[in-house]
Image (cartoon, rainbow, N blue to C red; front, side):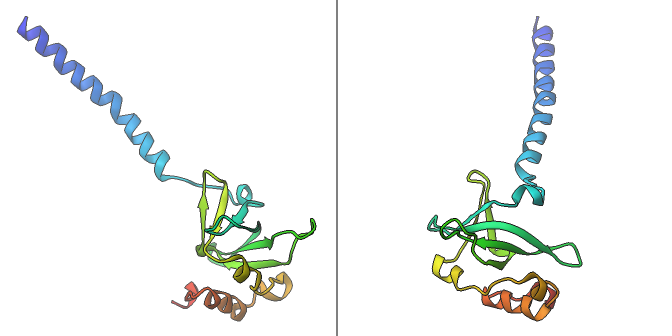
Length: 144
């Protein structure tokens, strides 16, 4: 009888461990791997920490190494018209998954004062890119 109880207990413990191991591993991967396709992020709202609407993600600038350097944000609409776009270093944004929105730590007034992004003039201009990074108080990552 004692041997039967011991055998059932060992089998139960081993079965429980085998059952729990895959689910724990799957949970860790699911929690640690929050990936997005860039196309899924296009047109996402951008707000500040005060929950004020700043604009929408219009596009991204990818550098020659494949790194997302900038997010291009169309400023909030006035009378239904889209405002001029601004470029912000991608690292200045955080993504709130539950709200499906990006957060930029900047007041609405300061965001409105950012220089306009002109694709034809700015896309390959490293001096312009460095100035944008400095405007945000950041060292351009390509100069480190």
